[in-house]
Image (cartoon, rainbow, N blue to C red; front, side):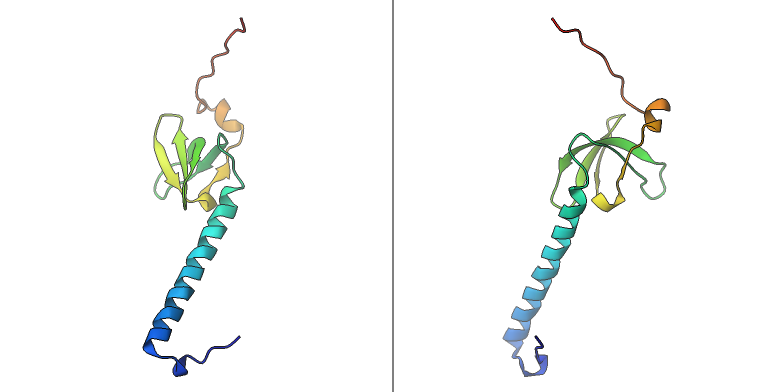
Length: 106
């Protein structure tokens, strides 16, 4: 479908612009949602913020456009899902995993 914008009034152009912008936002949200579904709450993930070393933590929450990651030292980061990677098991060997305490069953 082609639209000849030269024949549209100002009001029609504004309406068309608003609809295009809303559609682009929707597509962006759907893409972010699809990226979020690659991870689940409780997953160990890693990412590298610009100018910082790799950060490892647990995904604790889905937000509208980001996910919340809580690091092993208690920092909270809101991260765009496309920057996340599954944390591999080698991080635990490096002492980056939180302490685990086994509880006895009664």
